[in-house]
Length: 585
Image (cartoon, rainbow, N blue to C red; front, side, top):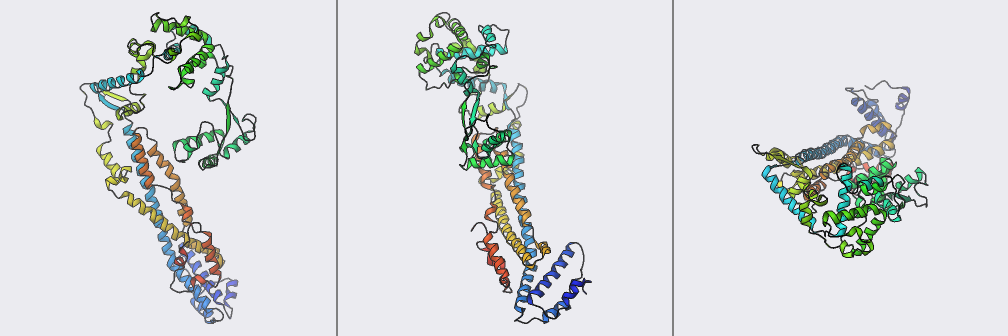
C-alpha cells in the first residue's frame, strides 16, 4: 500500500504511457524517500508508489521508447544499493586509521615530555665526584683561556669589564674608576665612531621600503604590505626559514605577528620567503646615539673592544686603532685603567698611562705582556673568578657530562646519603614503555613493527579516501543529473575525512616540536629522534588523492549520454574511472 499522495503525484500516475527515463526517476524518488525516512527512525515506511503502480508504468515501455534506458536506471539503482555500505566501510577505515596515526603521535609526545622532565633533573654526584669533575673542568677552562695572549689590549678589556661590573654590583668597594663612571652617567657620546657603533650594536636601524620611503615615513599599511609580499626583516636568512616547523620559522612568524600581520598572513609571508619569492628589505644603521644614551650606558652595556668587531685575525695595527678610537671617546676612563694596569698588574714597572698612545708599541696589542697563570693565581681583574664561577661552561665541544651539567646543573649528595641513579636516568619501566609506544619503538633495532603499522595506516587512509572521494563525487553528479537535492543523503562523508586529514597535517608540527625542542639531550640524539619522527609521520598530500576535474567531467558527460556508465548490468563504474582519477592530470 502506498502513502496518501498529493494531487500532483496522483496526476503523474494517471499517465497512460511512460519513457524509460521517467520510470527510472520514479524508482529513485521512491527509494530515496524511503531511505531518508528509515534514517529518521521509521520502520517499514510506506512507499510513495506501490509496486503495482510501478509495474503498470513499466508495462507501457518498449525498446523504442526507452526500456533499454530503464534497464540502465535499474543498473544504477543496484550499483547504489551495493556501494552505499561499501562507502560507509571506507569511511570507517579512513577514520580509524587516522585515529591510530594521531594516537601514536600523542603517545610519542607524552613519552618525550616524560623523558625530557627526567633528563632535566640535575646531574647527581657525590662530593668526591663533584670535586674531581670541577677540578678537571677548571683546568680545561684555564688552559682554554690561557691560549689568548695577555696583551695590553687583553688587560685593558679585562680591567674595563671588571671595574664596570664592580661599579654596579658592589658600589661601596674600592674602585679606581668609580668617579669617572658616575660622571659618564650625565655625558653623551661625542665621537662619530661611537655614534655609528651605537646603531650597529643596538640594532637600531632605519628600514628603506621598495618605494624609497623609510619605515617612519611610510604608513602602517604600506609597511605591512611589504611584509605580506615576503619582505625579510633584518638579521634573518631565508635559508634558515625553509623548514616551516623549525624553531627559527616559529620565531619569525611571532615577529611578523608582533609587527601587525595576522597569523594566516604571517604564514603566507613565510611561505613566500621559503620558496625564494621573498626579498631583503634594505636598511641602514642610525648614526647618532639618542640624547638619553650616556657614556656610562655605552660602557656598562659591554660596548668595549669585544663589541667592536675584534677577531683573532685582526693585526696588531688594527687592534691599536680600535684602542685609540676607544681612548678618544673615553679618555679619562682609559687613562685611569692604564694607570691601574701599571700599578696592579706590573707593580709600577711600566708607565703606559704616561706614554702617548701613538707611541705605544703595536706589539703591546698582540703579544703577551705577563704570564696568564700569574694573573690567575692573584685573581687580577677577577680572572680566577671568571674560570671557577661556572667551570662547566664555555666549551665549544663539551663532553657529554659537561653538556648535561651545563644544561641541568648539579645536585651534590653528601656522605651518608645513597646516590639514586634513577633520579636522572629514565627508570626501566619508562625506557620499556618508550620502546613499546614512544619514539624509540620506531627505531628498527627494537623490532616492534610500529613503523610498518604506521605505513599500513597511511596506505589504508589513502586507499579508503580515494574510494570514498570517487564515490561521493559520483553521488553529487548523479544527484544533479536526477535533479534530486535529497540524493545527497547517500554521501558517505568524504568531506569529514578530508577535514580530519587536514587536522592530522596541522598536528604534525605541534607533535614534532615535542621531539626537536628538548635541550636536555645531545644534538646527535635529538637529530636521530627528529629523523625517526620525520620518516614515520609526514603530511598526507590531499592534492594528489582528490578526484581531479577531468575525471568528474568525463563521468558527468557519460552519465548524460544515455547513462553510459551503467550500460552493463554487473559492472562497477568506479573501477572504470579509477585509473588516472586522482591528482592533477
